[in-house]
View 1 (tube, each protein chain N blue to C red):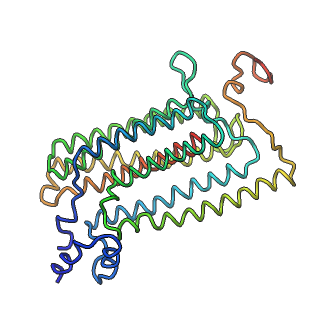
View 2 (view 1 turned 180 degrees about the vertical axis):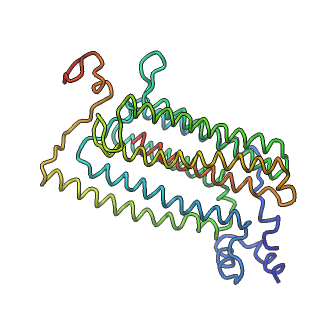
Length: 133
Length: 226
């Protein structure tokens, strides 16, 4: 039959799995380090998204064997989700418009700051006090 | 005739192979049907998760209330000062470990090493169950101690809770289903069900498991880190 053994099995040396495994650990540790060392701003976004894409790429290419599949299957997997990038772009544009309209015309506070758990739980002061420490 | 088609298809790959595969009247994907169907299921699942994450993008952009500080909310203290996001980092490492053991299980499956295949599948299921357990702890901490609800929370934008419960809940459901699926596959291997059929089933289950890990990569980046 067509599903003969020469195309069916994805068998590769174990070494490449160990290498990718270690790589995923290192990259995950790196993206956690971004948060641990409190990197902020454009650098944070760049690092987190680059590490994310590296991890996703290696999982799809090596662990899910996309690297060794025929192009017909690879494009079936990656093509339709590629269209989702258009959805994301549209929603980002629309979201930007909505939030700017709310700030500019509806009087929402542009400088509002979120509370931290320490402030909410009133560590060092009774609850209800604004600046306990 | 199918013999001739199979031999003519095998050598050409890349764009020529793509044209050959789609031009054939009979069959496009030269993989076992179960694997093709798993891939198509995963593509549809990609759409579901992307819709969730795009919805998250939209509410996070449009809410004018400040987004709660995830790094501090998901901090955990082991006796000393709280370590930011440590529980999520451990969960990430547990899931990556499980992906590694799954890759080994697939490899030993094709070597027809049944014992090691079953052991590595069970290890994967164990790590998956550990992940779900840690997630259950995370949820209960967030609900009971921090007072986060799908409709509001004490820190900032109320959308934080709805996105958190929907996205991590749906992912946790996938991990739980994956654990059951893996144990079911391991049991069938043990019973000798695939001795004649071949061990593609391990790769198919592996595809699902790696996909769950893949989704977590995106959730970890977009929900917890950014």
